[in-house]
Amino acid sequence: MKTLVFTCGPASEDAENLRRLCETASSLRLNIAHLQAASLELWLERLVKMRAEVGREFRIILDLQGAKVRIGRFPDVQRLPEKVELFLGEQSDVDGRIPVPAASVFAHTSPGDRLLLNDRRVIVKITHKTEGVLTAVVEQNGPLSSGKGLNSPDRGFELARVTPQDAEAIELSRHIAGLDYAISFVADGSEISLFRPLIDEKHRLIAKIERQAAFEHLAAIAANFAELWLCRGDLGAECGLKKLGEMQKRFVAAIPQLQRPCILAGEVLGSMVTRPAPSRAEIVQLHDAMNCGFSGMVLSDETACGQHVQAVIEFVRFFFNDERQ
Image 1: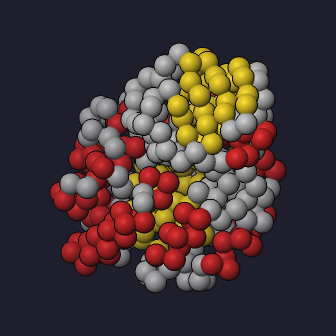
Image 2: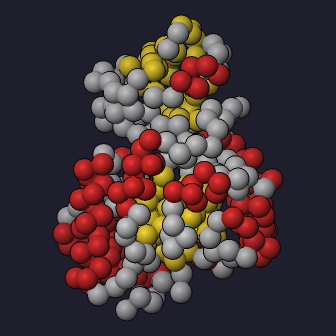
């Protein structure tokens, strides 16, 4: 039986959509980067109740930030101005000023550097630097909103850490049975020493593989984590899209030795965010992935903010032969 992880978000708040997700999924994922404490508590309460309503003990996964850098609270825009400022802060109401609550970004970035936002949908080139402010021109424009990731093709900005938001989410959820934690930007497996003291052994820890450095330490990561996710969004932003296929091939080659469930993530059915059916390329790619060692898949925007959640569920049921019924 394949592992099917569906992400909750605005599109799955609808009662019928959520019920269908809970009837189909192996796990429901909550990305804490997009949830304040009060919203997280409400989601946890709702999912625990849904287990009883649908009669299925699906797992709940909290996706923790770890070493990942994200922008702060920011307007939901489809395009940015031609010139922007990135500033050290938590929130902005102006589309030309992007808040970045990570001092390391400003310490390690210089004029001439490029920063990648929202899985490389937006690329900015830094033109000027002052204390706590980076001025940039937008070289590749696209959508941006609160909590989207920020990467550099050359640098890892943050060392492994438990963020205050991570610690808060763990405290709010540690009493819930059947709940796992996914750790972002795992580099070498040593991150277990930061998170395990806060998390009881009854909760599984999942390593998100989204940095090139992690490929040198897959065996060590597998030795310390219960499951590995190949997360192609941030990985593609870091290594470049041309190299992404090579990185996935390398990961697949390692799966037999890892002896852990390995899950495919990152735009698996990306076209279904806006279309009611997957592309033929996605269908073929999914077929190949499920037959070359992956134990399942994670859907993100497809179920969290997509326009066709019911169609996504129907396709997944069809593709996996309704094996959960």
